[in-house]
Image (cartoon, rainbow, N blue to C red; front, top):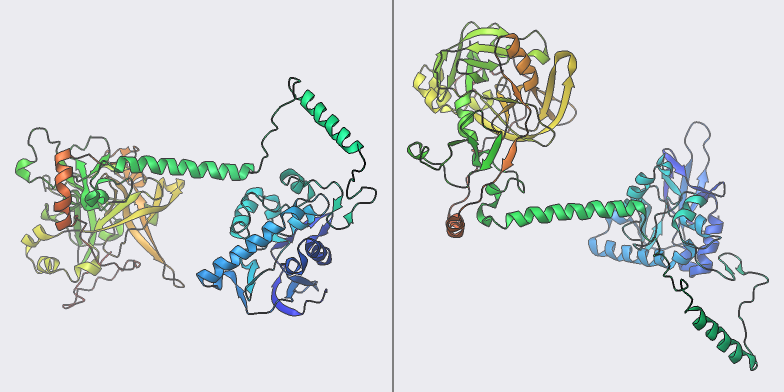
Length: 592
């Protein structure tokens, strides 16, 4: 040890690699580092790096390094400082690193000193009083020395935020240093040994020959300037690495794309920007309008005008559209399977899809919906036993008023989706369902499905069952089983089937059986249901200039419409209990 006596920190070397130069770990040559720093910056520079004391492993425990310093003051990690203190510490550390730049480019000591700037992690920067202190230097996470891209990202999280912009990230060996650090000219000076022997420190001019020699050199230079090809500009120094240039290009491309989107946004009125520009802000399903023609291309546009009443929907020049929420209300039904309930949706005028576990062993089957009323249902076909084939097909009287839904591929992660259904948790407090349960069939006209929004989180493909499991973020609960998961173009991407919870953490995974598996099930039942693989085109339509100019005052008094909010709940595994609902606040059916 060099005399540092104050303990600062300790860490094991498990999971870390020591950076080496000249076939020796730099962490083992602290005396050399301290000598170099003291020569170039005095004692203050020498105290920038903590002194390591390494304890070798005895075979039962990993090696450990303890860090010491001579600095006085409270010891705090950079992350624990208040904003003003943290800014001051970063500034002082940046100044210290800038002062070290000449030695970092020195031909003799540069590779070694620069390698010491590799840090194990962001916690390597400490504050001792008001002074910066670096611990865990000369170390890198295991395997990172061979991963240049990883080292760039790692450097950005450690010293990259405070180091001079033009300073390359630390090397891991001498060849790495030569490739990226331009050595400083040192005609007669070594970083460690001072003036080299045999090289004069100063060239003295004396006597009258000096002006003559100077004039001759000047004349020669002027003459050379007239020779073609002599005055050639040297290439610009490569101060930015290829990795940094790639990051800069990607960043600029992102800014250009953002600029283009904002340029489009200038055509819209700000009070309704949320509903009119889905490319900028994900919009509520309540503002989505869909083509009335099922064969139309999959497109959804913002509701730039108030919904037209039925008498005006067919006026000339107005394309027939309906809302996504309206379509879900016409398509989603409550499945009454004996004394249990679930959800379902129309795939044809007289066919309803649900889950097998909703209807199996049910003594009676019925469906109820706002447009279908309460009608009997018969079981046509069920999927094979198993979670991945949990489908059932019901037949209802034709012309029941339901709207069939088209099928689409599950999409991709972050695709906006909507789950519709009748979770039992909500039915227990729904007066409409209470009337329906008591035998009032007319109550079905007021039955509205619960809709929840989310995005596709992940896709899990099971080739043996020809189905994709769609993990999504839309809240579902027992009773949602069999209900549709649709994209913003109103197409079914999955059938909500089950949820999984973690006993150790408050995490719930929500699963839907993909529309690809549903299409295969329907094909076996003799029902043709093609899966549309076209992406859902979310788009906005410009309003006439007069409407856009008059709207800000109106919008200030009338807030934009949003989807009806429903209380959230944690998804739980389905219950197979068939007990009758109890009156009061628990008056809800066994939901599946």
